[in-house]
Length: 455
Image 1 (cartoon, rainbow, N blue to C red):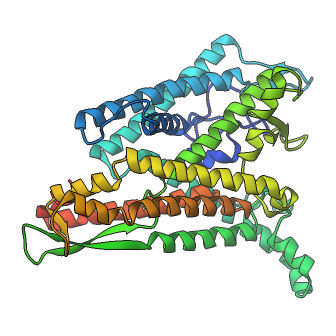
Image 2 (image 1 turned 180 degrees about the vertical axis):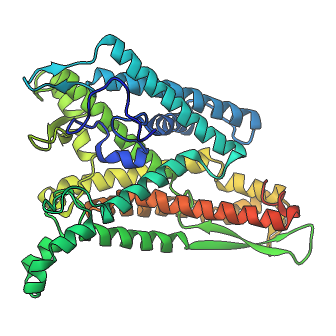
């Protein structure tokens, strides 16, 4: 579906992209059936998580009926969000084009209905694919699989993609661009400007060697931090001598906070463009437009040839990552505010997800007791185990949220391929798949441990 264009629209090259660089996270592709990607699913989950975390809706996740109702509500809301975002795309003029005479052409009402139908059907298919994997017809989550595939494609293409003519050199992958610029470096190996031109492409947003080195560095750092954990010694009460360790990872909530923070910022960017184009295209600061200039903000095209809109002020400006060192140095206050807001969002969603996802100390202690486990050296009591877990879980939740948000924002500042958030998600997803496959292998060899592993 990512390679199948939407029937009834004009070619979308050099036309504003409402999601822009966030598409790699939403697993979407401009002008194709996956125009919306997983955005509606993640947004629906974000809304329900906030409602549940704020106690506006009461959900007992220890109750199977409540969990099933919550999951069903998420699927239904995902369908409604698909319809809403599709209508928003059409109202916001996502498929309007300008002809050679400079006239703006809007799709007819019949074409708009056909476009919306295709977007909704494709969105439902994505929801069903995700549901199919979650119902044990596959491994892991469909959302995770879509994200990882999109990020990996972006990284590979940015690294070795032979995009455009070699004589141009402006749109090549990092390695090809470096090879093309190596001549001045070989002739003047001591020249700083020659090395700078070869390694860094001036904050143009095009892939360069600085971005490649940053990508590799972030991968290594995340893999290392993923291995950090506190291991609580436990034993199996029914069988003497059966001992093990209960790991509490440094990234306790994995990539969940980054997914929701990215979805939140992506929706601010998306809705901001729609409001700007529809109600405040001149970015005036009088009356209602004054508030629209602040929330969500104003947008400007990146160039006369590229009609991609980027925020210039307002809330959207401070929630849109500056994706190069040059942009960061031009406005360090914006970079600092963005990182602060992003880190706070990650911490908020980390804390909320621990409560919503049944990962808090009380729930985990109950799970250990129900599975017949106890902490070595302590009596088998839920209260005792909870007190022990309280030493670690709240701390790693907050610190992990801060670190994961800082790494994601910092990687964006250095121009990492696939975005910092995308790299974080991909590493976590690949690790999850590895753990799933190992668990499946263990249950094949020792069928008796299925109950212990929760299968």
